[in-house]
Length: 456
Ligand SMILES: Cc1ncc(COP(=O)(O)O)c(C=O)c1O
Image (cartoon, rainbow, N blue to C red; front, side):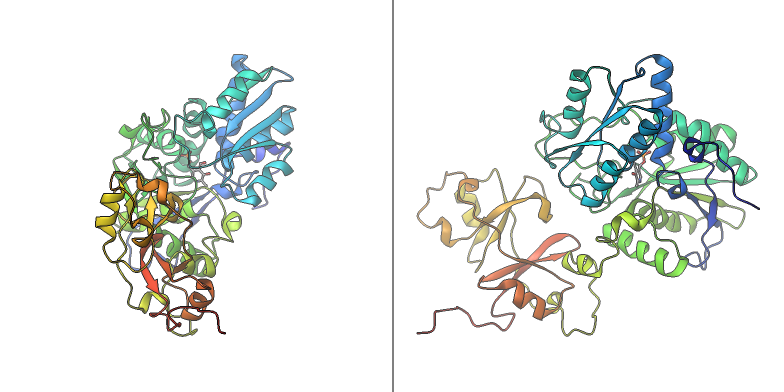
């Protein structure tokens, strides 16, 4: 079959193929297909929402000739809006958190978007938060129109109108299960609702384990573009209007390590280099498929390619540093095999007295992290504190005022040589496993001399 002929780039959005998984599905009864959304013109599923939102705004008169498209987003929605906006002659302004990968910012600029960086990791109430800043810029810019992917009904509608009927037609009406991640919720809510109107289709949302959508505590996770992170100091944390929880029959939770390993398997065994949200969705689908039969047809939405994540999920150094890859690599013993000291997490709101009690005799620094339960992700660590530094300090002082710079950190999957180098003159390092500080490793445990007294 020859490829399609499109009269403009806008026609190259949608009508993506289904690709059957053949290797990771061994021993599973149903057929599992990926909906290859990375084949959209701008490289992701979000092209559909971007095109639909712009068209709806033109139709309603909210976006007029000479108008300015504004949105807060760290990635694919911005690219979709910049692509469609550029083609249709609109200026596009995209507000991005400064944690956004340099490649993504470069891609936005390449499509002609004006990029406005703002700090990441802010509370929802902070006026500099991506969404708040984008809303303000849209209101202040003459002709400005805020795309608002989280609340704009044209986003799920795009999937009702295109993604769902495509899947129905491509499977000859035999699809029995839809699996997708949840960012704004537009893809799952729109596609899921429309498929359910067409036939008995089970709709499964897939969520990073600690994301709030699936019942996690909202603490950080390492998959971009899906899930719901909850800043501990955020007061009002509404879920997006476009995430219609009633559409999903269930939400399956997938831990980061499983996602990372699934991404590697997809690339190496299926020949499919896909992003983290695709890998999470595939991992969820493989789990759901265990309970399905040979007549079942599962369609998994694969939102984007892995090209934008080569320096993360597909980089062994990154995986080892965060303790996601912990198998031996022939470079000698790994840090994770050494005896580690348990390290308490001191919370930012604690007093010195409480911190002192938690630290005990710990011969090294403990993290001072945002207030929540459980081990701390590096992105929520605000500083470090040692028992020694608190000596003589009043018990009711806020411990936060006594936090110092963080020590080096090493991954449980890194070699001991690497750890020794990373340590430098420091007395100890934090060890990261599965993206959380899991313990403390001392100089002695690494076979280094106890102190580096100047030789004289
Ligand atoms: C790579 C990727 N995966 C998944 C999603 C989630 O899609 P939705 O916002 O429709 O829930 C997004 C949204 O930005 C995305 O960029």
